[in-house]
Length: 217
Length: 217
DNA sequence: CATCACGTTTCGTTATGCCTAAAATATATA
DNA sequence: TATATATTTTAGGCATAACGAAACGTGATG
Image 1: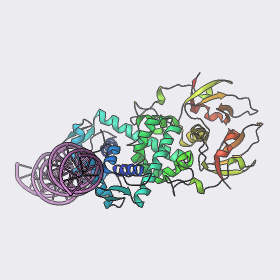
Image 2: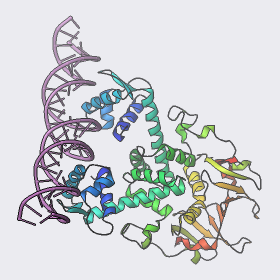
Image 3: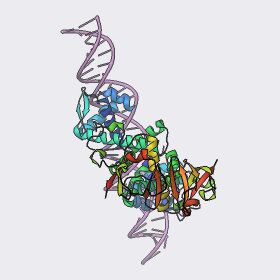
Image 4: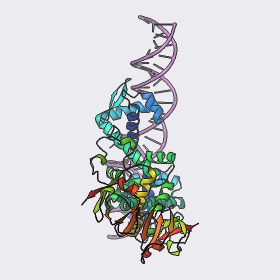
């Protein structure tokens, strides 16, 4: 099992070797706020578990497995951070600190579900190295509510993350992945779309229609 | 600092002494799936920190401080569980297991915010022993949407938790604490109330009107 | 009231993760 | 190249949290 502390080391190494090269003991120690001796010991252990390639006095880099692990946790961190900021309205710094703890505990499946709600942040655009192979959004439907016709039914697949406020509004209105919606549009309104979510109707600004991706029936 | 493991012991003792009396070493060991020897040792430590009253060979019970701690964590557990089930659509068993980890990491302030979104579950009704002194709802406004007149504006304070499904529906409609609402009622409907939330209009069943507590302007 | 069985505690050990101080190695400078 | 400086590792310790085995209380039974 990879404990929280080990995961922190993996993340640290991942960050320090972002641009290529190896991470040095002292740099890791400084980053992690521990003594260099502790780092050496931990590197020995992580190497034993094949999470890092470690050469004495030379430096350390992540193995493929270590990289996979580190990316997954960094993604969970971002997701929790965004959840705390966008949904719970936590200030950025507090959110970061709390995410540092939550990232070690959030399950893969919960992360996936969170991702479908708040979307994958900018860091993910184009599926760069920080989330490759994990981000679900890119393989999903391209249909949005904007493409639905009166009377159409669909299930919400995921949300596009344009900005925090919009995402928050969508969630609070009930646009959560997995929920079934029907486009009614039969109210005497011109502007907003009228959608049925379960038993309730919601009037949705047209600006928001293409932020909601749906799977058609 | 009270680590996750210690917290688990506190919760365990809290559960075992729910109906009064003391918790016995073996019972705790069984519950925690550790050896009795480990329990004894931990009791010694918790007693040193004044979290439990412990008499050798006799049994253990929580002190006031220990109780406060245990309750807070059990509340965080319930909140996370409900978040996972209601918002992320996780199945009950998985949610419980994940909540067991998250409960140790969730901050007080995040818990409070979560509570304001998903409301306090049934276990809290009447502020029984599982949440006394923590639950914010009871000190808040008694005004609900039902008491609003046409044209009135207000800010949503919190939601009454009648049952999970209703809370979920309300959240999904956009009734989230902190959001400003206006009672419009100018649509050609008889039954539901029509409210404006930000840019959108929502038709709300009258049955739900007294579940939404508001702060008047 | 002595004894026995069960529950409980103590003791010695292990693993993790951290520390400081001392030794080893690498790098920079003369 | 030799030496000084900086980096890194090793060695020995400490705290937490777990274990099994052995010693110890407590209460029930004869």
